[in-house]
Image 1 (cartoon, rainbow, N blue to C red):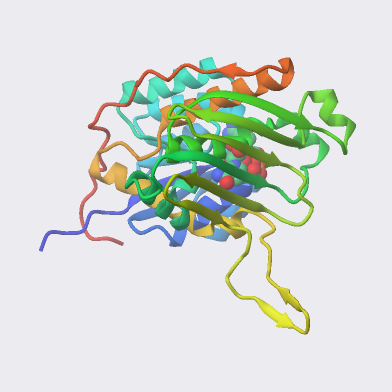
Image 2: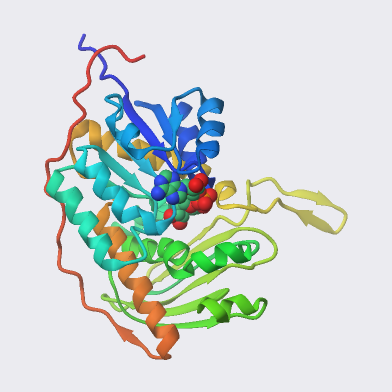
Length: 355
Ligand SMILES: NC(=O)c1ccc[n+]([C@@H]2O[C@H](COP(=O)([O-])OP(=O)(O)OC[C@H]3O[C@@H](n4cnc5c(N)ncnc54)[C@H](O)[C@@H]3O)[C@@H](O)[C@H]2O)c1
């Protein structure tokens, strides 16, 4: 009997909200992976998480990349740091899983994706919705032609409340949040070729000061003709809400993650169901499954199913929508030229008994 390959050693860089989720998953919920180290520019954050999960921790990216047990790195730091960190991870011949967006600046994001390609390492982007079981069923049915000709779509993601003012000044809604729906529509229906964005900013003067919005609706057209809306809200008030509807000539699909589970509690004249409050309440399983894909891609020496180019495509749509908001005009987009990574990539060399 051939020995099972040794687990892939994965380090997490950035120990904030999503880095903590990824580290906890790698420490126990992702078969074939082993959390080997965590790091954060804020050493206290690294220590808290490292001690909780019993792994080495620190603030230094160099030390992380010098650790021979690190085969891959999850980058879960703020977006402006992503291109440089992707470049450093790829330069050290390690596979990278990077949270969306690839960056805030397209030029450096393209350079980072190119660096990963040149180094022959995997670069997976954290579009977790592709790994959600309901969205995956929808994608398979659409791809199999069950809906017929796709005519319309509506997709929405809403947060319960806006981040604090300091975060508002750093975040770009269309890059951080809407990019999930840009990717989702590209994945389900193909490229977006035209969009017009509308926004509101009612509750805080900071939005106008920093040129941001709290609620955006984008009207978009796909290359195959499907017309639809992409809605993102920072302030739904009632919880985290994510839903998508695809209307075809033969069937319509609705994916609705607006309840935590299927249990409904009934009392006289009233039915109650629990609403999700955070993205994790909705997508806990998908965050683990996307890392399973990362591990499998490195183990098999192949490209992950969602990679750097998909991240760049979402960034281009975010930039187009930002332009549309600013200029008040419709933006036409060219179909992207395929610049995919080569077929054969870094393969995890480890073998021996699984620990
Ligand atoms: N896929 C999702 O559902 C999802 C959800 C939340 C956040 N995100 C993305 O994940 C990324 C992080 O978001 P977050 O909400 O976890 O942020 P956060 O602010 O909670 O955590 C970021 C951490 O990175 C650390 N950091 C900053 N710069 C660093 C550097 N150069 N090197 C090492 N550490 C550094 C900070 O000290 C902080 O602890 C963002 O790109 C965000 O868009 C994705």
